[in-house]
Amino acid sequence: MRVWTRGRSAAVVALLLVQVSFAGPPQHKRIRTGSEADINSIGNRKVGHGPNFYSLDREITLGSQLARKVDRSAKFIDDPLVNEYVNRIGQNLVRDSDARLPFTFKVIDSEEVDAFALPGGFLYVNRGLILLADEEAELAGVLAHEIAHVCARHGTRNSTRSEITRVATMSLIFLGPGGWAGYAIFTGLKVGVPLTFLKFSRSAESEADYLGLQYMYKAGYDPNAFITFFERIASETSPGKFATMFSSHPPTRNRISAIQMEIATILPARDRYIVTTSEFDVIKSRLLRGEQDKRADWDNSRPKLRTRTEPEANDTAKPDR
Image (tube, rainbow, N blue to C red; front, side, top):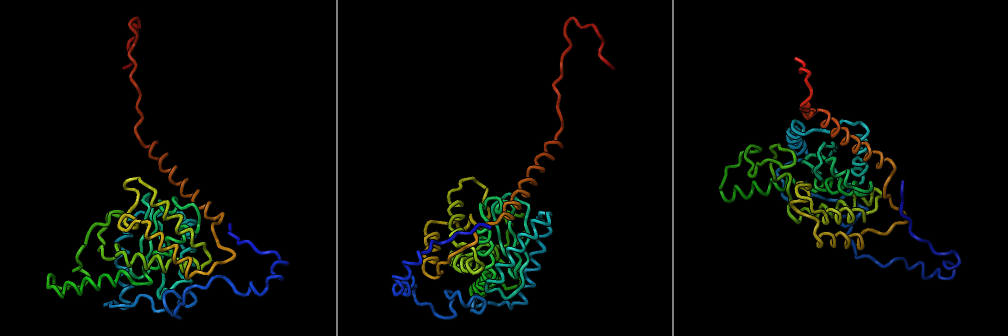
């Protein structure tokens, strides 16, 4: 495990300036107890409040129905070590979050850089995203962001707002799950999933950034890894490489600045952070090896062609029949 350590003052200096050292670091802004900024109350805060037609039980049922659609159409990584690793990282983050329901983590065998969470705690991450991450903390930041979407109940709150709007305008009769507007093909999976559960407003993405940073910090990860991963995404220009997570609301400079501000104002500096582990490197190697094996299988399955050779003019031998 690699950690980052803050420098320490010499003991003699600390003794000479003992009164100054008690002053502590610069004071952060006053934080209301139990608010979303109160990291000491994570797990006991009222996160995800607002109009919502879905109880937690109904949200889990809904998420299970949508997850079955994904499971029927997506191809998953079948390496048990990869799946156990991602699940363990995810569950550790869930324990340090505001989650009020269980989570399931699955790895999709897709080169697209994407991750998404369905209502009810069903979270999917693509192979391509894991391979793009340089450190475990970067992967943890993305998982924490998606966990935050579920904790804040963005999917069902979105659906509730859509239903209220439709009833108010009388443009459609509310028909329950079968009546969702925006029922479209999810680009990354080619499966019908209501977009209201996959794409969120800028304010929802900002809230997921805000809460996700806290969750990864609480779990011991360096929150700055979230910024480095976002900056790498922002510098990428490969068309079609990024799916819904980054194409709908890319990591703009303003979004990155807001993340930096949060780190500076509500996350007290620590002496040590988890940056990465040797296990993360092993998992990436296994995923890369799987990619190479697939390419080799594809090359071996292609028909072998041989150029026809014409007999020389003085060659009187008859061809084989």
